[in-house]
Image 1 (tube, helix red, strand yellow):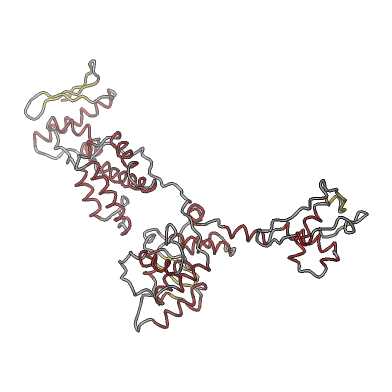
Image 2: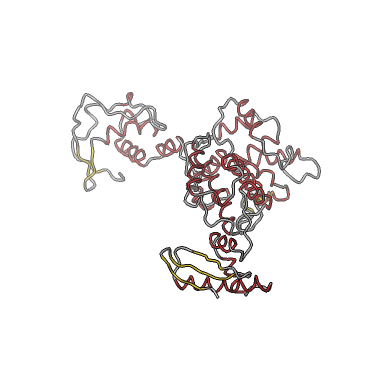
Length: 459
C-alpha cells in the first residue's frame, strides 16, 4: 500500500511496483488529503499492472482528467503508458484534414483556408517541434517575429487566433497542460482607414464599362444589393420572387448558425440588370451567374480592369466597400438599422463597427435641409424685402442671415441689435452646397431695418 509522508521538499508518495521495487513520486503543491487520494489511485494502478485486470472506473476517470505533468510522472515509474508526444507540424496537418471546428461542426472553405495560412506561418517559425516544448515565452517571440513581417495587425491577430485554437484542442486531448498562446491578443481591431464610398454615379460608370450583361449584373449585385463577393454564385432563378420584390439568398458564411442559413434581399435597385440577364439566360439555366465556376474566387483581377476602363481609380477593400456603400445608401434612405442589417446579413453592431460610412455627401445632405436655413428663409420672407420680392426662395436664404443677425427673439418680439462693424457685412460661405453668395444681395444700411419693435409670428 502506498505511503504518504512529508520531508523538506514536500509531500511524497512511496509504493512498491509490480516487481517489488520501491518507487517514489513527488508532486509539488499538494495537500496531505490530495496526496493520499493520489496514493489510493496508485495502489489500484499497481494492482491492475500486477494482475492484468482493468482498473476501477473512478481511477480510470481520474487518469483521463489529470494533467500532463502527473501523467508523465506515473509513466516514468511504469504505472501507465506515456501519452503521445504530438509534434506541432504533424498535429496541425491532422486538424485541418478533419475539416471540423473546435465545436465539432464542419468547417467552411474560408475557415480551412485561414487555418492553412496560419499553419504555414507557424511551421515556418517553430518547425516540427513538440507541442509540449512550446512555452508562453515562445508564443511571445512568435508575436514579435510576426511584427517584423509585412502583415497588417489583424492579419497577425488572425494567425494568433488560429494558433490559440490549435493548442486549445491539444489541451483538451491532454497533449499539453497549458495553452502557450492563452494571453496573446487575438481579437481583431477596428480599422476604418480603408473605408471608401462608391457613389451611384460612379457605380453606373463601372456598369457601363462592363463587357457583358453578366458582369453588369455582378457589379449591380455587389453595389446595389450588398452581396458578398462569393454570394453571387448562390443565386438561382427560382429564388427571384418578382411579384414580391425580393430574392432569397443562401449564405455559406453563416449557414452553420441557426436562423442565418439564408436571407431575403430587396430587388428594386437591381431590376434592370436582373431583367436583362433573364432575357439572355440560356434555356434551363438555374444559376444567375454562369460565366464563372462556383469555385472561382479570382474576380478581383477582371473587376480591376473594368474599373480602369471606366476611368476610375482603384480603391481599398475592392468588393467589401461596394457592399458597405450599398448598406450606407439603405441607411440614408431612412430604412431602420435592424432591417438593413437583416438584408445585408449581419448584426447592427457589425454594421456600425465595419460597414456604415460617413461620407462628404452626408454633410451636403444635412446642410441643404438644415433647420437654421429654413428659419432664416422664413425671416427673409416675413421682411418682404422689396429688392428680393420676386427672387426664388433659395436666393432669399442668402439674405436671411445678415437680417437675422440683427435680431433676437424675446417674448415673441424682435429687437434691434447694432452691428459692431457696419462697414463689414456678414456673408454666408459661397462654396457650401445649397448656399449662394450674398455679395449681390447685401442688406442696405438704411431703409430696411424697422424703426420700431415688430412682432414676427412663426419664427
